[in-house]
Length: 382
Image 1 (cartoon, rainbow, N blue to C red):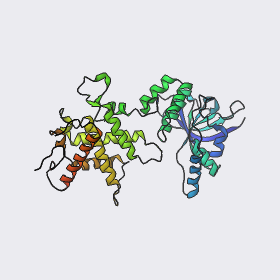
Image 2: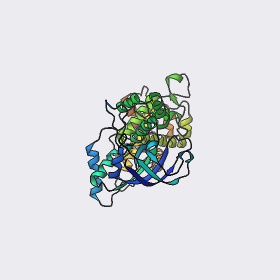
Image 3: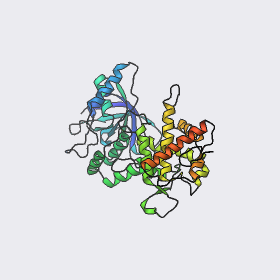
Image 4: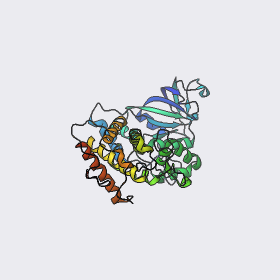
């Protein structure tokens, strides 16, 4: 009955948490002796991990090979049942948010030769072991999580890096408590059971969102305060996503960053153009206003960030706020409260005309000319 001993720190991250965190280091080759990867397959409906990708494992090994200074600080996260772990004479019921130094002892047996379950880090574990099985790694062990907790943590952690496929989440819901997992994902991770980010809820309900309570849902179509169709936000977010401002290596943009970027940009618009924002008859907070202003502002910031000699990082939201303010200085809020000489602009060509109008205003302002000089939608020839 092999045992493995590690000096560790144990604590609860919050008093209401179900599970305990135990933090230590472990040689990666030894970790693989007592922790397994439980992959989701048709025969294993309670496996949480996705299929192993050799390219990702090789990439980890190559990263370590290319420079002897390279290290991987990110922790491997493992779930461990209480029955497989002891902590000397420590009573787990007494563990609180204050960290305690302990010796973690993991006991295996024939029935459970690998009681640990890798929730996050299967490719890092394999890649590091492929490079050097004696290399130590940081380890966060979740002590005593329920099956539902394991499934929840897997989806939330992994969706930040590479979006968990909708089919994978649906399959998890077969093996776990569907209602509990679905509700918790929506509440805690802003995700729908389809695997898509529930960013509309976030935009509509988050305290610092300038659009809080402004989305037009079927349940409140008669409420004039909620005047903006939800597809305005879907199109705006899709445009931001296509620019890959998040700069992650993932094939999919980071949905959390995209919605945060969108909210920060529009917070500046609402603050700087308070009168146009508050005008109930204005066009700024209409569908075409949200879409076209988002497109113009993002295009301007991307252009500035790619200009040689500019130290601009669009993942820094402080810089994003400053850049948004600078872009607004090159526009005119009066456009959105003026009479336009065209209607029915909620089409691809109509929205294109609005964006061109914004660019014309920008050129006029930069040249010191009247903002509405030969501007398509207001057509002044002053």
